[in-house]
Image (cartoon, rainbow, N blue to C red):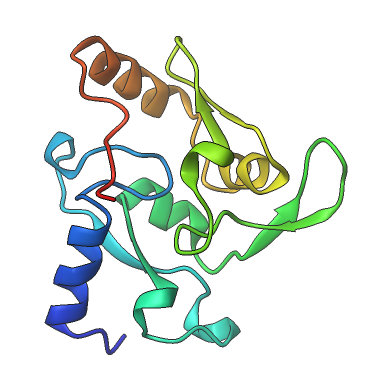
Length: 140
């Protein structure tokens, strides 16, 4: 990865120091959030701002080199949510129990592939919600 220090700082600030997939705050994690290639280099993705986002370790690990999956409602091949070209609130809803619901095909496949509703992650979000610290708000 040949992303510059300046690019990393820009992406981190652009994301508001929040995971752009699950909306967890960096200050709420034990490890620093990571720079993710939205479209992995192996699939032709570039090292430019349009293809970089901030992701927590779990989202980045589960995403890996995935770019799409089958929508569980339609069985159609669907690209994952793209934080540079799509608005988070148009694809995800936060539920009172700490789970996220995909309200679009992209939201549904992203939740599935990134295992966003894994039990430990939901428990963590529920606790952060009680403290008024979730979802992390991205800078506009």
